[in-house]
Amino acid sequence: MLERNQIEVAILKSDIEGGELPARGTWKRVSPEEVCVAFHSLCREALEQSRAEEEDWKTRILSCPVLLTVFDSLPAAQWHAQQIREDSNQQAFLALTSVQRIFDFQRRRQEIGSHVTPAEMEQLYKSNLTVSGKSESITSNLIACALRVWDRAFTIGRAQKVILEQEALHTESVFQGTSKLDGIVKKCASDAEIEFVFLLMADLQKQGLLTAEQCTSRALTGTASTHHKGLVDVYIMKHKIRAHLLEEFLRKTSTGWSEKVMQEVKATCQDIEVFRKRLGSTSSQEVLPDLAWKAGFPASADWFLVFVEACRTTMGHSTNN
Image: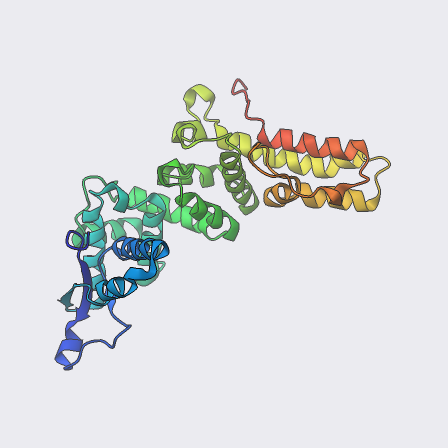
């Protein structure tokens, strides 16, 4: 494996001219990290099975061949590293995801300054990078979409968290695709709606109610035949419905509830993750949590919780109006 995917380390020309290599522990790898991670995983698995070969594996690690490449500047080394990554896209298991590309665009913008335009960034990439045939073409439109997603979604901690958690699912992620992510944030009018939609989509995927195949850009944002209304519009409406249920509706229907019951119900329904933690999953594979916290609840409070869950997970909708 290491012979086919050599580990490459960048050495700056200034270090060579200074008569010394970077100190141990400060080398900058420019080859994809997956090679090192895979090697470490293989080592761990072997040692878990048998400690007898511990010295052999220690020798392999300490004698791992490394290619040292000299660069005139750090930016030159960074672009070289990115080119290796682009070339690696020919191997599916090393291909860049849309989320990784968004992080890359944001890092470049941060280095250059917020004044840089998508068109200027496009030219920068074209001048320094040969995009893989399996990668999406880097255009000013793609960069603008990616940076809009960063500004509107990735700056919201919980939204970014569920997007990154979905990354572990690779092609099964319901957020795979810059255009999908951009379609979501453009539909939402506030940070609260963005957070709700991302958390809801991740939750529906975990419950087996939403798949990556169902999350095409057309399905999410709608088409002319659906009056440009799609799943995201349904999710935004669910956000509005939740607000109505927890305020006006609850005031009119919670007759006889104690203040404690009222607060417990609101705290549970206000947040999708709290709801799951306290009431469990609709999936039969999940073990139900301890429900003692709602002991003594009136039947109407129990049914309200069921109703909120139904409103959140029911997927049927009409686009006729």
